[in-house]
Image (cartoon, rainbow, N blue to C red):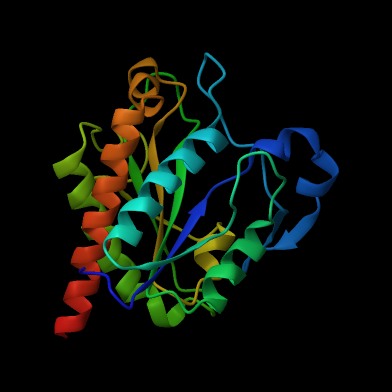
Length: 223
């Protein structure tokens, strides 16, 4: 059990009920650099398969894999019919758990012609200053695992070589544990959407994330 004694945070972005409560998700929060909405609805495929549903499905597969490997898993939400929580609260949940590592699961709403995954990494901003180096290392492990275990290519429109630095996301700005946010593919793109909506590909993503988490934590233990 390679993850025995480890705590892993999983944040499946958005929530299925966000579509029905704009007052809640439009409330303003401080993301560490600027004011933004508490949350958003997320994107969807042309057929209406929502990002929120995708995020939660991958998170459930990932949780199962991590628990089987001995980890204690902390989730920021436990169903796909609720509202929120705010992105600041999601960061707090994982921080309070003192997770050894955490991952935010998303899918992008990019240009229809664009394809591929992007691993979003934090820029130093106060609370996250002590985990920047570790987060970058974890981001590299996630990128390598996605290329090894899935057929999704690196993004051809976001970042470089599947990696991009971001300073406008509360989940990354406010984290006190090593963390990245992964845009697993581009939902408006028909080729990506066909992959993202299949359980087989979602399980591949979970496998890739598990492999990246194991690799990252093994490296830290050897230090």
